[in-house]
Amino acid sequence: MSSILSVEHVSKAYGNVLALDDVSFTLNEGEVVSILGPSGCGKSTLLQAIAGLLKPTDGQIIIDNQKVSDRHMMQSPDKRPVNMVFQDYALWPHMNVYENIAYGLKRRKNYTKKRKEKVEDLLDKLQLKGLARRMVSHLSGGQQQRVGIARALATEPKILLMDEPLSNLDIKLRLQMRNELAILLKELHTTVVHVTHDPMEAFALADKLLVIRAGKLEQYGLKENVFHMPKTEWVAQLLGYTNRLMMEKQQLEFEGDNRGSIQWKGQLIQGNCNDNQKENTGHWKVIVHPNDVKLVNPNEVSVDQKEENIIRERIKHVVFQGLSWQVILNTGDNEDFSFIVDQPLQVGDEVSICFPVNRTFLFKEEIIG
Ligand code: ADP
Image 1 (cartoon, rainbow, N blue to C red):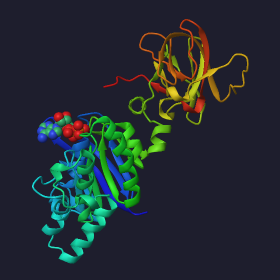
Image 2: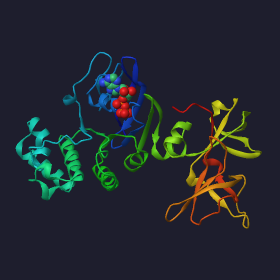
Image 3: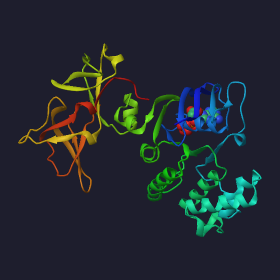
Image 4: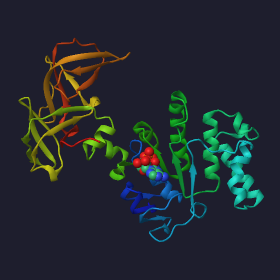
């Protein structure tokens, strides 16, 4: 696979605000990356820098082996082999579906026959055939979005840029379109840079996640790798690792190979830790995903204690969720620990639970912003 996009040490300052801070990554042809992070972290700024809608303060961007911007130059958006699908689709309301899709091709003075073939092909691929002559203002949100994508694809961009493409849809349609869009992107084999604040949308659409925090790249990699091995507590929290146990100040017992152990209320907990933090004494946190936590049945202890952490705690609260129950343990202040069971449990009872050592993360305490 060859790299189609290379973002190298890109920064963007707005006065005192550093919206992007030395961001670097490369993307291969045909890959879909989701730029993921909370509102204001710099996602749109990065997308706009790739699109050519703003000039980075520093660093350079290379698309399809051509430098499109550095400190001294910036290629305009229409010269770049990219096209954008906007949040509000930005369709021409006075044009029908066909005319909207053909718009970019007309501007590029393509031959009429070739243009017709291209538009027909996109109408087909995006299941818009029966709607070609309909005015876009008479389409549903989902249909409008498909027109927006078809229009962006018509000029055969090397990279399709999508800025929160599902955020204008209501929740039901959003979930439906998320899957449709995921299937479509796979079929098209297009390289896509997609922006979202929603981890579930990123998981559904992307091959890779690029997690941004306050303008800095926090983690980048295949979505499975980022989810299974979050580098920081912040990334873990963003991706749904909501269980958190706080330690007394202590030295981590380093066991080699990014593994360590600590004591929580006299109970040993082992997990992954960063090699570079191993010497540190401090306040450690245990971070676990609720889906990795299982109830241990005292009558049949079949848990391999080398592979699983086991702790005992009382139940504080049980939340009925329809087909399952969320059980919240009575851990201390600033701690949170819950898991899902398919039978209701009794508040006040003490239970044993286990969670895999290789799915347990030990992070030094940091202030989460
Ligand atoms: P996101 O897309 O993740 O919500 P943005 O890229 O829009 O974040 O913004 C990143 C930061 O840059 C924010 O602090 C935002 O307030 C600031 N910012 C964005 N655009 C401008 C602008 N034109 N002028 C000043 N500050 C801006």
